[in-house]
Length: 102
Image 1 (cartoon, rainbow, N blue to C red):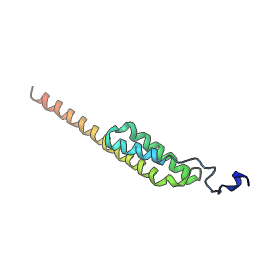
Image 2 (cartoon, rainbow, N blue to C red):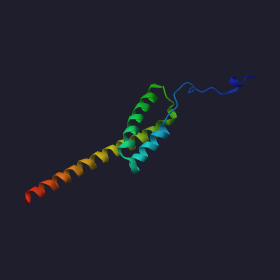
Image 3 (cartoon, rainbow, N blue to C red):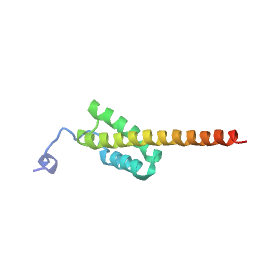
Image 4 (cartoon, one colour):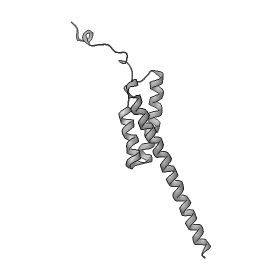
């Protein structure tokens, strides 16, 4: 018997493999230590991969980890952006208070 005929056929044979684990790792790293550097790629890659999964072009098994990594990336980007805005406001407040003392 031919080996190719012995393998069970699945409907996912010709689909692109998912990158859910990579996206989840990038999202978690963004929350823990890397900030924007891994948060933005996790967000973008997650969005693109979820579109491919919905279109039936990518394996659907990675949908959960892809969503989780993308959400972690989004949360990190929002927290980082709010932190930067807060730091800028504190700097401007300090400059304003310093100039008022002159």
